[in-house]
Length: 444
Image (spheres, rainbow, N blue to C red):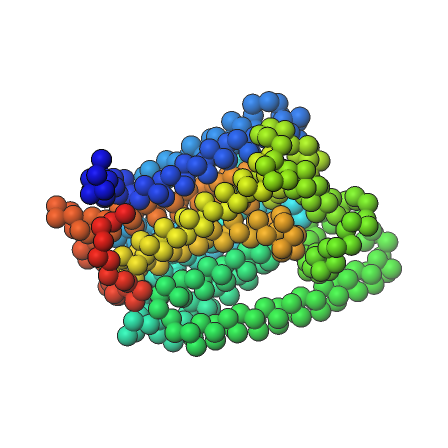
């Protein structure tokens, strides 16, 4: 097959199904998810049996695949999607975040989930919040374009939105808030925001974050003093159920301190406070360059949350540093494909949607890897598609579906029979893409 025929075939596939590279990355991650999540589930196997853990994971992946296929067939500019379904997602997410903040279930030391009755499905709204924030930021930046730049008003509203979602997610983990800031910064760049505006936003994030840290420190000290006084005055206070009390700020300070003094871990024995870090280091050291082989992990039975927050350590143990680098490249490749497609978009809305979805998945993966390898302090962050967790898999599947929808719709722009990207968008959302780069070569 000649080069010209290959390009024509590739373009035909993109027009019909969406970007083949995105499909390839997604399917590779699904295969890795099935293999590695089962390999890291020795504790679940001991409690639930041999097949139940893998059946549960495959079920979530199957439902996620339905989202991917369904959304890939819907044009991103579908008015039902833009004007009804996405706003409903915003409303549901905000209600869920407020509910979890007030009365959520404590999962792994953080108040972060609620259970849907009857179907008994645990939902973590912080995952939905990332998806809602990306779509909301895309709306705001598209509506506030001014001379190939995001207007000052648009920047202010976007920053306020990030602060709002970040505040609602703070009890579910600080890394979720930091992740949202990174995603928004990427979208600001693609949306055309000038450097001085971007720096101003980052400065505001830093100031607000610092003020929150100080306020949280003072409030927790005050609460601790009040509890001590109450315990002295009333012996009954000793019997109060504290299972719902989550002192996240003190734990964050301890984790940051341990991270700054990580070298001292070699002098410590394994205990309940450092077991995640210690067994994670052991797993990575055991894997070496090439790994010990799929299913031969030694630490999966000892490492807490090996199947979710620390699954990358098991990957490094089983397929080594080389395999870990391959997994990291998959996520970076996904972001690079999104950037390539974004530069072909004539309108800013699809460019923001695809880069926002890709950065959500990629930054979450990089955060997970950084936490596992000790680059960041200990925190809970899943590895997209590979870690166990229903909400995470479904949200990231929706993101892949949107990316495929944008790529397919944009590819159809040059197709004489189907000008999908020429469909009129709702008022104010049809601004030109400030990051568009005319591409002379064929779609490939």
